[in-house]
Length: 388
Image 1: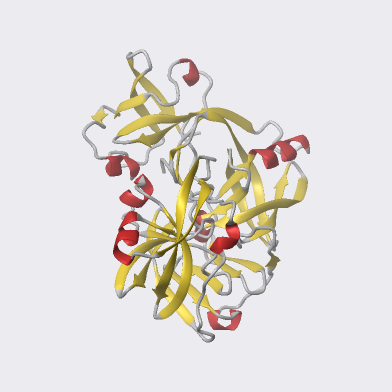
Image 2 (image 1 turned 45 degrees about the horizontal axis):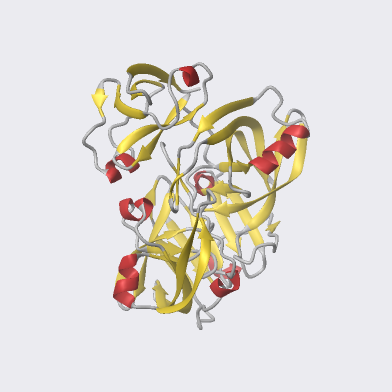
């Protein structure tokens, strides 16, 4: 996986976003999902027409140019909005008079208007459905069935819910925020606050603030790798190059369940988050009505260590591949983040479209590669990159 997708929006007038809902009091909605490594894409109807939405518990409801043009929603406000990398722009907030999920209609839903975005374009999305719309519902994620179930009560989910984790009511966005535990170096920390972000396609991103705190408490001893660069695509484009950290911890505890051998990257965004990759380990249920989060691991699946990361990652930049984060000190003397990658293992990467690059076309999963790189001085060199 060569890019990290996550959408995080904040606005100074967040109360504007917590409006609308459904008049239905007895409902069970089942949404079939298309998955894009491993993001969840669902269909919704507006005005009798079907549109594609990313199902993202870490964002606000978003609509694109096409939806604004076709549905002509009512303008509510204009507010400053930031993406997950802190890039800020002023965007319009509209009110969707109706949006229908599996026959259940939600009315007067605030939605942020996002203009042209590589993420929306390349995933062929019309918008994002978020937890504000679902703030009075119970949401169950079943990745084996590729189904999201939304109901008015936990009983309607029809699965056994045990070992609840109390969610923290500290976000006006109604984000599913809770605490998990780190087990490392024969010690345990029970107070890592994060939220479940189904719009992020990795397992865990740790905020620098939390990373520094845990490091100072004695975690990650002799297990910290430092890199520099960026490889993420956020709402308003690519991230800025910065110092990054990578650690491996023996165990991550979520309630009474655990995930072994977890690789963690830091993030410049102020909040830690656990992403959609969690759905590869088990079922997730968010009871927004009662403020409870559930993680039920798959009983018949042996947990496998996460895929090792490249010593120099690839990232997209328009219709070109570039060097993302460089984790190897020796490599940093030869190449720099942002350098253009011309070929991999002798196979040219030129002539691809923006979306082909964004989706990682021309690359196969291997333990090592030869990158042909053009540095900032125009010099072309072959570089060995490995997974470690």
